Length: 263
Image (cartoon, rainbow, N blue to C red; front, side, top):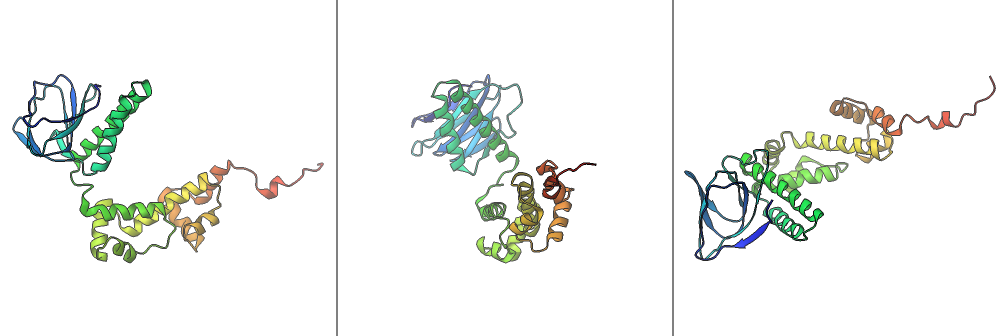
């Protein structure tokens, strides 16, 4: 890969590329302009990113009063990596900017670890562009409250959540919230909460050393058999089986304390 680079295009700048000999990552950080490839055209603004492949010959112009600030680099890869169309809009511009700055800073340390970190940032940027092309609008602002609520459910599944409270936090009616939640995440808020609790229960049972009863109570269940049924439905195993696996099938306190006597 070439050195990651930021460049503020000069007022008189325009770009007519020769056919590329490698891949090119090209991300708009600031400014306005227009990008063309073949008969496809895209208006440029912050967050629009392109991934070109060998043989592409892109063209671009910009508004000299709103000059483009572009981040990019050339790189080689044995795997096909350019989407079709070549560009998409990365809506999480803060993350885009962090990755760009991290890549630039790491590479310019000019050591093996820095170059490796820059390559990792490049891989993440390539993944973001593919996501933007294949699923445009997935992280749209209109659904940010849904993402926020889903994250809160995963972070604190033991809380006594209600759909009415979730909808209120998202500033939506209960029906609107449920509809958007299902469209976004493929299940109802109640089912998502159950899955979040089961995921956390598995972690507590297999990593935290808690008993089944302690785990159920920690996650807001007053009925341990009900918790156990939900756990098995979601994992295919009983909570006790996972607890035993974590414990390494250690002998119980009772059997461990028994002293063997003469036959």
